[in-house]
Length: 180
Length: 228
Image (cartoon, rainbow over all chains, first blue to last red; front, side):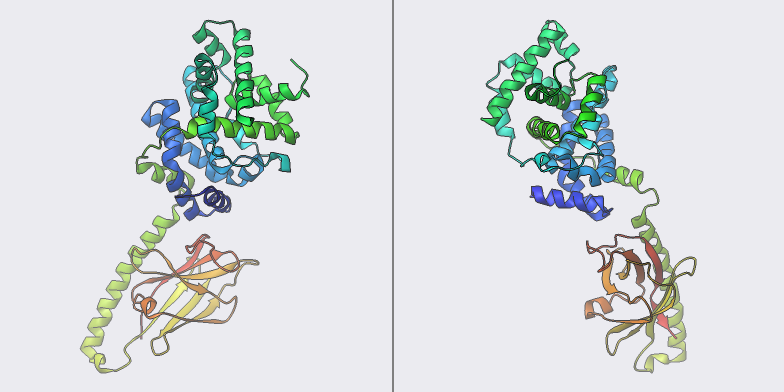
């Protein structure tokens, strides 16, 4: 099994143009990232295109990975999720591109930005379970399906501002749970 | 909207940004702050980590094998590996033809009775002849001697010599001196592969390839054949 520091080392070597490391990184992470792209896009051909574009990005942007403060798998997952959500939104049309988030090139690293990698999945699931099911569902839909406030408002039959307040409270509650 | 320096508001905006819920103009404003505010960046990074757990919980899915080839074709249109393979194939065929002719000549002339047999060697040359090395293998000492006839090493770089037998992955034989002669001692396993194999020189960082495989440009190649 490839560890976090293995993946970090592979990304560092990819940043130096090491094609063999790129192949190893692909072998270690592509199935996971393909799973993410497929879950978001729900279409194999599109998920495969998305995966290709994600790895083209990874090759070109590996050098910027260190400065964004994300752990290596989070970076790869975030690049994949953002790219897949952008494709999904382009299908639905009309919302802002969010792709830049994980790739910001001009950030200078600060100690505050260094985030300790944590095993999060179980904690997040547990904390989401403390929210009302509707609100947990809204967070999940926003992240995994790229739904906007407008879409969430219409889905839950609420005014947009109400949904925003409602979701923000849920996110705060989620954060309190995650940091407790 | 609210006071941008309110930490609670920042935390919420970071979450909305990570979820992609901000409008295009809010998103741009947030990004410009992200570039200069480490605390905001840390806030975003925390949310990114937390939310990535949603995606991390999705099961892995086998990727169709063609996907990686498509990625490589997009990133490296002048495919070095297949070029090597092509070179290897063409040169192996040529080498086999040369070897067959030599065998005929040698057999007909009765040279097989001469004890040491033909010496193996190669001219390793760049296509434009800017880099040329003469290689000779002495079976008695198992040494491969390389004489630099043209071309030097770029400042801060190294030349690494590789042995490519058929379709096998390149084997590193070692680094070459920047000038003059380099003598490399081969293992018996390397020596038996020489006849008909390709010697190639790649451009590498000082100390050689960090990966065990060529990482830089292939500068020159040559097929090893019997030298008369």
